[in-house]
Image (spheres, rainbow, N blue to C red):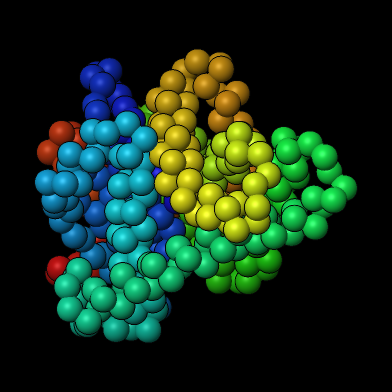
Length: 326
C-alpha cells in the first residue's frame, strides 16, 4: 500500500503537477486513488477486468484537519483504511463472481459491517504490534537497568513480530499473489511519477519499491516509537500499556510527516538514505508482477487519472474493462 501523501510528477513538458494519490493491492486486483476519486480494478475468474469507481467527497471537518500538521496523517490513514476495506470487499465479491451486488456504500448494513471490521482490525493490529511486544519485553525488566535500552529491546521485539507476521502470511499462495499486485501498484505509480506513458511495456521497466509504501510507514512507526516511549521511562505496566495506545495517533502523525518529507525530496541523497530501511523491508511485501497484473494496475490508475482534471493529459488509452456503477 502507498500512503496517500502529496507528491509531484512531471509531464514531458516538465510541468510539475501536484497530485494526491495512493494505492493498495487487493484480491486479484489493485485499488488506486486520487484527490477526488478512487478506482478498483479486479481480474474476474473468467479473465476480464472488472472496474469499480467511487467519488471521494471529504466532509468539511476532514478538509480542515488535513491542513493541521501531524493530525492530517491520522485523517489520511483512516480514509485510506476505509477506502481499502471497501476495495477489498469488492475484490472478494468479484472472485465469487458477484458483480451485481457489490458495495452498498458508506451507509446501511454494509457500511456498518465495514466500519465494524475496520475497528476490529485496528484493535487487533494495536494489540499485536504494540501491546504484545511490551508484554514480552516486560520479562526483561529485572535484567535490564537502562530505560532506554528496555525501549530499544521493545522496538526490536515489535519489529520481529512484524517481520514474523509478514513472513508467515507470505507463505500463503493467495497472499503471494497479493504481493505481486502490490508490486504492480508500485511500478505503475513509479511510471506515473517519471512522466512515462502508462503502458505494460513501460511500467514493467520500473522498480518494485516506493518511498510512500505502507510497509515503509510501519517501519517508520517502530523507529519513532522507540524514541517516544524512551522519553517516558518505565512507569507501571498499566500506564505503559495505556501509553502505547494513547500515543499511537501522535506517532502515526509524526511518521506520516516523515514519510511525506522523505518522499518529496527523493532528489536529495539524505532523503534517499532515510528511505532505505523502509524500501528494504518492501522486498518482503512486493513481488515481480506478470503482464496481466500490470494491466489491472494500469486500468485502475488510468480510470483515476481520467477523473482528475489536472492529470488528464497523462491519461493513456483505457484498457477494456467491465465497469460496475457506484
